[in-house]
Length: 486
Length: 96
Image (tube, rainbow over all chains, first blue to last red; front, side, top):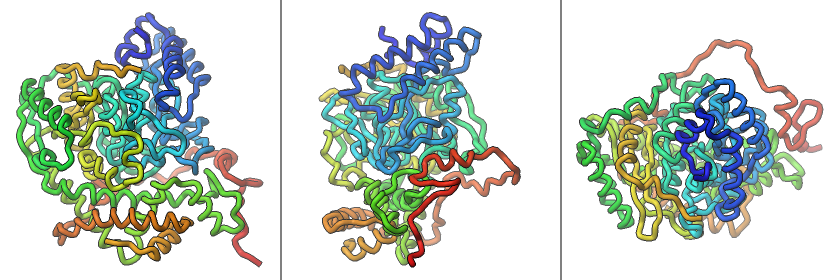
């Protein structure tokens, strides 16, 4: 078996038993990247030299009996997380030469756990998009069908995990940006509770929705990575001061006694692909066969989630992205002659079309006379959506839904049609609006052989329950074991 | 809900974006479509519903006001498009 195909769990065991070395493992991953990266295009930046150094250091630490949880494990990182000394572009021309002077907290925790960072993955510019097509640098292709998108915005991370170009990856999720690409690439994608992972060093998109998440080859690996990056951080005032459990704690418990809610509103959605519907129905049966009780629940404000989201997210983005002014870091247009034209030229040349579109929508919604009609209204609807979930979690512990209404779509299909692109986020963005955790796990394939994902959502800080249900579903099925042919 | 060309240009000015004529036309159509979709929010009665801006209901996170490690000045300036002698350099603000 090629070492790059290992899960983190398998690699960890082999490294500790000294059957393989970290250097061999990193070399296998780098060879894999060399042979298929020109087809997939998952990475913006690779750091092979420093990765090999870290691997040698990991081998020394293993030899001295160090058993740090990710020691020697090659991990890819979405290019939205600041990495000290490694260029961090956020998929944008405005940050194409930005070299962060510090590590994001999630990166610092990865490093402390011994992980080897191998590179920075492609993404939609500033994480705004569902296909990774809005990257200023390159198109990432779905490893299962190179003519299709990998999903987004963490498309590079999802494709890299699916194509064995790393053993696990970090992403970020503001409206589904970890879960949707995980679904399209056939891997496990977790967005934890808002506040679970520090946002320090995560380039801001929409601050009340952004959360760091992980992409992995198995539920166990996902739980392992999540535990490493979770926890309170004084440098993020929205990080929650709550204890971090071992998310694998309840794997030994079955699903008997667990109640799973199936929102009725999600079943009657227009534009649902037949294969997705079928895979979803079968997934409900699988959960029942494992002993869970499945009941219908109602989330009556679901139809308004997309509209509320596409007011709140662009509004917060327009405010956050005001910082790109060509003064402190990032691109500055050299043609500018005065301060005002420097701002305008820098921003117009530095931001791509989708980012400019969202800045305009957000600025409009926040401008004098419109604030109450848009941002305030959407924030009130957000309250109603949260109340829907609260009520649902009185009768069940897990909610089940598809991740995306269709499998991965062809490259170029929606790139000029923003509203259609936005509507494909319908299942995922409620979890961001309400702050609850959501995980995407493989649950089937379409007739064309494209992966389909199943979403499990849980109550605030109840990731342990999600991992437990996801683990048993994975154990009872073999979708996660299939590999794309490249 | 249609947004006019003038409104797009006004909002672009607020956001410090220069749009050429073709982009204004395209943004007009696309933003109108999005705002048209968003208008469905008005169907929901939100009287007496408080707005949510933080899903965790966290209040202010206080800390002691103590000296701590900070970024070195040179490092903080290392990404500046133009810097000199410990300062950021910008084009002249006040014209003669």
